[in-house]
Length: 216
Image 1: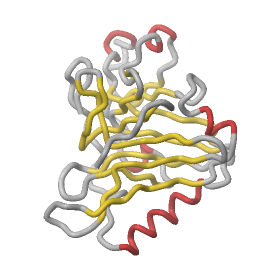
Image 2: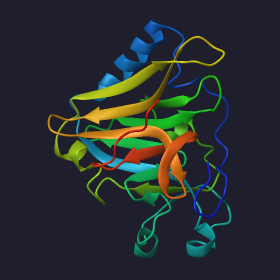
Image 3: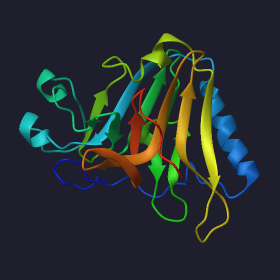
């Protein structure tokens, strides 16, 4: 997980069960049933959880660590996650519905159980150590990518599972699609490589409408 200044990702909150990996068809179906809880809901807020690359520049007095919400116009002029055709997100994406449901999308540790998963839990509760330096960007109303999920209810969340070809027998999910009646938003296990979209095992890429997903 490296970005424009070469920094490495912050620590997570510790061990947790994989959100995406499935050892059996029944586990695949459990994960699909779980994400269907979003069906029928409009998304009120979308938040990117990033390494806080510029805390020293914009909040040098914040010496105790912890999350920082990005609200200054100067930082929004050149966000670390924005690339041509996609957004590259270090830690994960958090969704809040109009009814108050909170879901988080993040990557599982690289290796035999890697992938991306979506669960009905907040990022700071389940994934990130609350004391690490993390920048939280509320992106839902700042661009066109996530607008379809606010304008119309989610009709389906598609987890794209593939047989795992590593040492373990099972299924992995490197690609998730959010659907409404008229549009879709695609999220993949990916990152920026010299400014272009590439495969990754520890980063999330949110594709802009005209960008095609990677092949697996």
